[in-house]
Length: 297
Image 1 (tube, rainbow, N blue to C red):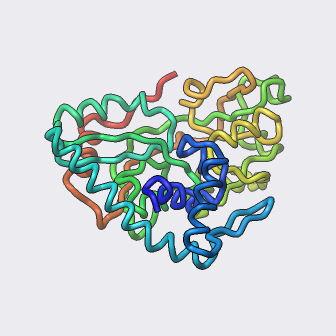
Image 2 (tube, rainbow, N blue to C red):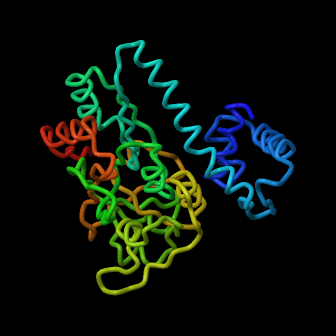
């Protein structure tokens, strides 16, 4: 089995969706299908159960995933370390971003690189539907996540930013007649649902009730920001976001309205306690030294 085919298999085992796997790997869905079919012929058994609605691992697929994942990660890590050692770099710190404003956080990245040129800093997008799993698998070292995070195996570091909330609605939506909204008013409309775990963490992003006890109805399940924005643009849902979305996701079919009765949403560094190391502590020190990011208008 070729290395690229192993990557395709493991990515599909995570995503359980051919389209998302293809997009994540910058491949065509046909290339993903061909790779999986080739592997199934080699093994002599199906790796995935496929229907028009779902993709699931078979028992053979689960066994192969569990066997291949640590081997593949170790091989990639070894090759990368060798390449970096040739450049005088002794380690990599991988930071997963849930907020979309990585550019706003450049002061942290710049100071970290200035203080620690021996370490490579890699900042990448994380999906909220799989954020803690990505951290626990070791795909990233640090996650910038909204609070609260109360997990026994995770350490919560310093706050990076805290931003006011906005509501994304379709341009032309009846709410666009207003210059701002309250959560009480937003509760008249469907919000996105998610299979994100733990539940309390997603509830901190989109509450289940208003302060007066009104239920906030949740509609279709979304797995990432793109899906949520698309449904909002079609007026199927409204979506709560931090205010930097007004700059980083400005679209002609989306209007952002300030939410008047919600406090700022804080984001902090989060990492697995057992992987605490010198680069992670160094980044946390930079954030503490510079202080939380000041919200931009």
